[in-house]
Image 1 (cartoon, each protein chain N blue to C red):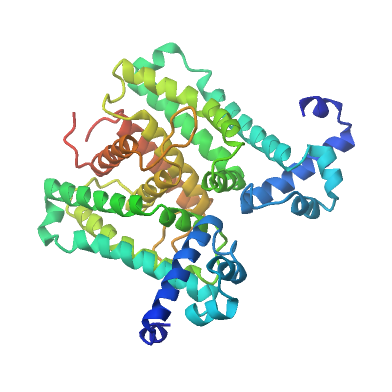
Image 2 (cartoon, rainbow over the protein chains, first blue to last red; image 1 turned 90 degrees about the vertical axis):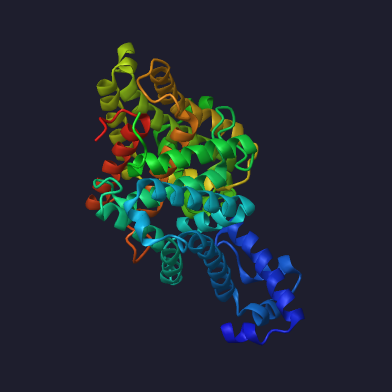
Length: 221
Length: 221
């Protein structure tokens, strides 16, 4: 697949990009198993053989989409964490500011393209299959650096000792992705616009409070 | 629909129950728009006209399922909240114990039947449509009593004043439903069994901590 991508001409690359974009939207709307190669071809206006030629087929196409989404996410995460010195885990204020920056970064990434959380969540609702180990590897690569930072901070006593970091992180991601799927409650619609400025401010403020309060980094009132 | 249900003979009621059970599983697997009346009929071994006769059609059937799921949830919630005296909102310890009981109740309800969170979540991923106001009404009826209890406690200063209760509750439900859809992370599979005893204990402990810490009901360390 990577060899193939190196051999692409500009026109081939443009077709490949276009198929990827259209397929991403379809997978986000219907899930991996809810979209056929035929439907992807129809949506792009190409025939199945052409789509197969450009992408290697539905399975390869989905893997390319996932790899690209997770690599982008990882680049944003490491863009924040790579600047972090070893001492940050010993300093509650410094840790708080790194986590705050990371949170703002993740929110910015998600609000740019609402298909990402929908695509992930659709997939989480599907049965485990032969793609599961591939996805696990990609997603763990994104979350592991953050987990390790927190684990170190916990070890030296900067964050509370009785916190289960796995459950903490998993819950954090459900809140984050969930918000960008349905938006906030407003007690009349049970749905809201996640990109509405006021909603987004309230949600950001809440997640900041969640991080510092649950980790025990907040000065107590 | 309610008139129809009053007229059902025991045999009709049994058919109706069976169609409901099978359709619930299908909707949880594929979403409301992902299942046709024809597929429901095929899965029950009946023809479309018979399914229509028993249920009133796909839309009515889905509404009956939702009504029954939300009414059950509401009964469990009010089963806890109806015992609560007016003074509980002024007493941090009493409030903590009510919320703990409510949490255990909701977890017990969810772990009994994993199709419930899957069905809700599938639906949340779909576009808003003519069923949305109906669902909003049902779900708000479940969450409003809890919201009002918390709002009163906030007003009298028992829980922290700077907490956005809407975002707090919405995030709580995402954590809760999300856990019962994918289970916990274990860093090798990115999926786990939500009903595994150890996982469930860790998750329950975490949600208890979340409630009391975020609401400011915890004695600070």
